[in-house]
Length: 188
Image (tube, rainbow, N blue to C red):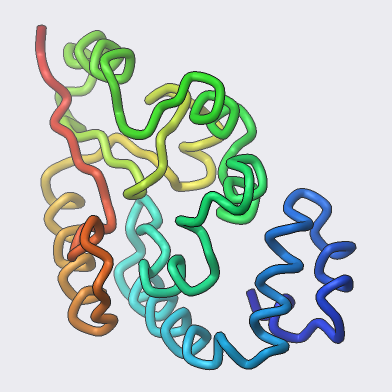
């Protein structure tokens, strides 16, 4: 986001970010109009907390920042928003084409099938708001959007959520202290 804040024109952002040109132009324009003066300090706080805790899955972007820049807006297509958030193409496609707004029965089926193999890591974690194409999506695992983990890591991520929520208060109703979706891997 630092690069978007330093664009000379909004059109510069469009050419710099071909995967999300309209969204980049919009954010750059907001910076140029000085309407996002307060988001960089918030982003720095969240980044420092993530660096301190080193979670296996990155938390959701601060909901205040997301709201200010338009992540929740339907003014931009899911592909542009997904690319801005650095989501894998396969997951963006699944979200868009299958209209998947949360973990669903296909994800649950995968988790049940994995239950016998995941005794040492009995939890599945995803960045809140991110819906993977599969709980096994290698790209999502590599990008730290999802992971299989143990109780100690889950406890640490809950502590990180609490610390972020305390440091960065906001009014988004669906993300009150919830930066992760954590599911136990269920046995059949």
